[in-house]
Image (cartoon, rainbow, N blue to C red; front, side, top):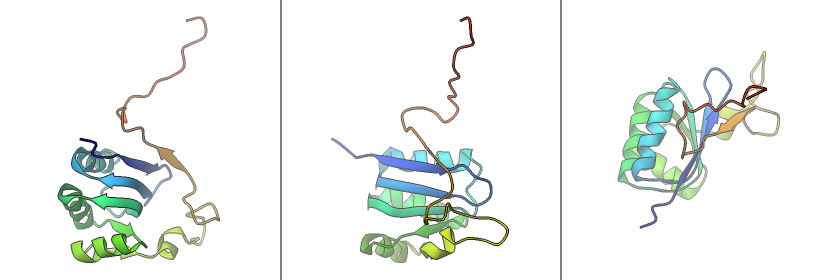
Length: 137
Protein backbone atom coordinates (compact mmCIF):
# COMPACT_ATOMS: atom_id res chain seq x y z
CA UNK A 1 0.00 0.00 0.00
CA UNK A 2 1.45 3.36 -1.05
CA UNK A 3 0.89 5.81 1.81
CA UNK A 4 2.45 8.80 0.09
CA UNK A 5 5.25 11.00 1.18
CA UNK A 6 5.84 14.19 3.13
CA UNK A 7 8.56 16.69 2.28
CA UNK A 8 9.75 18.85 5.17
CA UNK A 9 11.70 21.98 4.35
CA UNK A 10 13.56 23.19 7.43
CA UNK A 11 14.32 26.77 8.38
CA UNK A 12 18.05 27.48 8.58
CA UNK A 13 18.01 30.96 10.04
CA UNK A 14 17.76 31.77 13.77
CA UNK A 15 14.64 32.62 15.68
CA UNK A 16 11.16 31.56 14.68
CA UNK A 17 11.42 29.73 11.39
CA UNK A 18 8.98 28.38 8.86
CA UNK A 19 8.73 24.64 8.29
CA UNK A 20 7.24 24.05 4.84
CA UNK A 21 5.29 20.80 4.58
CA UNK A 22 4.35 19.26 1.23
CA UNK A 23 2.38 16.11 0.46
CA UNK A 24 0.59 13.76 2.85
CA UNK A 25 0.90 14.07 6.63
CA UNK A 26 0.17 10.46 7.57
CA UNK A 27 1.41 7.53 9.62
CA UNK A 28 5.15 7.50 10.25
CA UNK A 29 5.58 10.90 8.61
CA UNK A 30 3.82 12.44 11.61
CA UNK A 31 6.43 10.95 13.93
CA UNK A 32 9.18 12.26 11.65
CA UNK A 33 7.69 15.77 11.72
CA UNK A 34 7.55 15.78 15.52
CA UNK A 35 11.07 14.34 15.75
CA UNK A 36 12.48 16.97 13.43
CA UNK A 37 10.76 19.80 15.30
CA UNK A 38 11.86 18.40 18.67
CA UNK A 39 15.44 17.68 17.51
CA UNK A 40 15.82 21.20 16.24
CA UNK A 41 14.56 22.32 19.68
CA UNK A 42 12.05 24.38 17.78
CA UNK A 43 8.69 23.13 19.03
CA UNK A 44 7.83 26.53 20.48
CA UNK A 45 6.58 29.39 18.35
CA UNK A 46 7.40 28.16 14.88
CA UNK A 47 5.23 28.39 11.82
CA UNK A 48 4.25 25.35 9.80
CA UNK A 49 3.27 26.09 6.21
CA UNK A 50 0.45 23.70 5.28
CA UNK A 51 -0.34 25.24 1.88
CA UNK A 52 1.08 22.25 -0.03
CA UNK A 53 -0.35 19.56 2.24
CA UNK A 54 -3.21 17.80 0.51
CA UNK A 55 -4.10 15.03 2.99
CA UNK A 56 -3.87 14.56 6.76
CA UNK A 57 -4.95 11.37 8.53
CA UNK A 58 -5.87 11.04 12.23
CA UNK A 59 -2.20 10.62 13.26
CA UNK A 60 -1.34 13.76 11.29
CA UNK A 61 -4.17 15.64 12.97
CA UNK A 62 -2.84 14.63 16.38
CA UNK A 63 0.68 15.78 15.43
CA UNK A 64 -0.71 19.18 14.38
CA UNK A 65 -2.60 19.42 17.69
CA UNK A 66 0.62 18.69 19.59
CA UNK A 67 2.50 21.38 17.68
CA UNK A 68 -0.39 23.78 18.28
CA UNK A 69 -0.23 23.12 22.06
CA UNK A 70 3.44 24.17 21.93
CA UNK A 71 2.53 27.51 20.35
CA UNK A 72 2.99 26.71 16.67
CA UNK A 73 1.28 28.82 14.03
CA UNK A 74 -0.04 27.47 10.75
CA UNK A 75 -0.20 28.93 7.26
CA UNK A 76 -3.11 27.61 5.23
CA UNK A 77 -4.94 29.29 2.36
CA UNK A 78 -6.68 26.39 0.57
CA UNK A 79 -10.19 25.35 1.51
CA UNK A 80 -8.77 22.08 2.86
CA UNK A 81 -6.12 23.84 4.95
CA UNK A 82 -8.56 26.40 6.32
CA UNK A 83 -11.03 23.66 7.23
CA UNK A 84 -8.25 21.66 8.89
CA UNK A 85 -7.21 24.64 11.00
CA UNK A 86 -10.80 25.45 11.93
CA UNK A 87 -11.73 21.86 12.77
CA UNK A 88 -8.59 21.22 14.85
CA UNK A 89 -8.63 24.75 16.35
CA UNK A 90 -5.11 25.47 15.10
CA UNK A 91 -3.65 28.97 15.29
CA UNK A 92 -3.86 29.98 11.62
CA UNK A 93 -1.92 33.05 10.49
CA UNK A 94 -1.87 35.08 7.29
CA UNK A 95 1.00 35.05 4.82
CA UNK A 96 1.76 38.68 5.58
CA UNK A 97 2.27 37.91 9.30
CA UNK A 98 4.97 35.36 8.50
CA UNK A 99 6.83 36.65 5.45
CA UNK A 100 6.57 40.41 6.04
CA UNK A 101 9.71 42.44 6.51
CA UNK A 102 10.59 43.23 10.11
CA UNK A 103 12.36 46.40 11.31
CA UNK A 104 16.10 45.91 11.58
CA UNK A 105 16.14 42.86 9.35
CA UNK A 106 14.31 40.76 6.86
CA UNK A 107 12.33 37.63 7.51
CA UNK A 108 12.34 36.78 3.84
CA UNK A 109 14.17 37.32 0.61
CA UNK A 110 11.81 39.98 -0.73
CA UNK A 111 9.68 37.69 -2.87
CA UNK A 112 7.44 36.27 -0.12
CA UNK A 113 9.60 33.25 0.69
CA UNK A 114 11.86 32.47 3.66
CA UNK A 115 15.42 33.72 3.26
CA UNK A 116 17.12 30.31 3.42
CA UNK A 117 15.75 26.80 3.68
CA UNK A 118 17.37 23.39 3.76
CA UNK A 119 15.61 20.37 2.27
CA UNK A 120 15.40 17.37 4.59
CA UNK A 121 15.99 14.05 2.94
CA UNK A 122 13.51 11.72 4.68
CA UNK A 123 15.74 8.72 4.01
CA UNK A 124 18.73 9.94 6.03
CA UNK A 125 18.98 10.92 9.66
CA UNK A 126 19.44 14.61 10.41
CA UNK A 127 22.64 13.74 12.30
CA UNK A 128 24.24 12.06 9.28
CA UNK A 129 26.70 14.68 8.08
CA UNK A 130 28.96 13.32 5.39
CA UNK A 131 32.09 15.31 4.76
CA UNK A 132 34.24 15.17 1.68
CA UNK A 133 37.33 12.95 1.95
CA UNK A 134 40.52 14.61 3.14
CA UNK A 135 43.10 15.24 0.43
CA UNK A 136 45.37 12.24 0.03
CA UNK A 137 42.72 9.70 1.14
